[in-house]
Figure 1: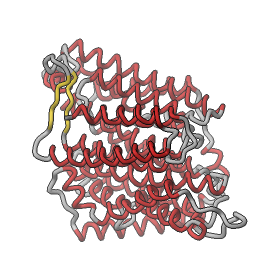
Figure 2: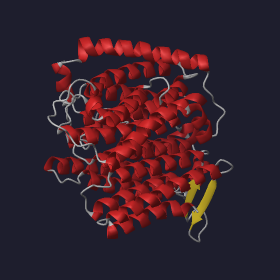
Figure 3: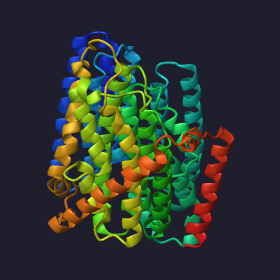
Length: 528
């Protein structure tokens, strides 16, 4: 059964490669993708009783490829299939070649394969396939600067995955297996100094893929966003980077008690704060959203590393939340930038008046990412900080203030009078419907958030009404502080604009990965 989840997107990809020029074929592909979403939901219902394990091949579990589905991996698959459905509809009228559609669904197959795989080498292959496909899709318009940035992104990923490849090679030498379950059992019997090197190698590769190496990996990644198709950017931010967070969880599980949560808690805080600060410094709507991908991933890592059940659940639900509101933001940003002919946040005004549905969807997504009461982000942040130590709670509050500041700037596009002259055509319905639908989910995911959390993650955790009211009060206080900071410090600050243009060379980025590896090796391996 599990092999179908990898095969179905491949079949859709091949079908579209042959018939993509025919719009009826695209409709059929969207229909099959809808069935795939339903299939993913069915799998989620099935694994609530017990995980499903499927062995591909005629060998035993150590030699074959093992596919494993539990409630966490199936929640990721459901998120992925849903976002790809929205993106497929959004791209319906894309003036693209059949290669675009083929690569789009091949990427879905690679991501789903990653969620199901329990083989370390198979994970490497899937990650590399996904990286190559993402690079080609982000260079789709063949702009010279975009081609250069895409190649830098690809080469940095190759360097990062060499760390991972050497790490799993070391694990194979110690355990005689690539299977995660078997390797974890052997690793549990080994001493700290033996595990220090493979842990540092693997986690350096994963840290880069998750954008957890502070500042250095930011620029090569976010520079891809402005020139790429909106649908591709939505996948890159809303889904693809979450795949790497899932792998981060897998490898923390692999190393068991040896894995450091305190170290990555601090890394998550630093990364999130830096990402928020860099977002405040941007003037392009896409760049603001790009840096907030970094900050929100840091927030997720904080939850997953905080060391208590509620924060862990909050981290998991924030993965879902971020996939929804960030995809909505990037899809609406694509509509807005196309209509206004610019991505400059100061040159776009009156979106709500001129394009009400796009404006409402954007507003819902903004309220979602800032954690406004009754929206999806408020539930994930509630769990993140519930029962959390003061360091986590205050870090999340400060990060939320920074997020509010940058989205006060971003929200300026919704109000005022538009400079567009004459009657502008309404956005294409194929682009409008998925954008509005995701905006609606930002609200529904908040109103029904506690029930969704209990259903997805099979937990008894619940939201305390008084606690939620307290968190709502903190949000409004944070909004007031953010408004004052934006008005008197951020707005029109030329220094921040200069900081926002910081760049980093390929050599320095590689050196930064080496530095991160050394820190993990020393701090976690020998001082932990």
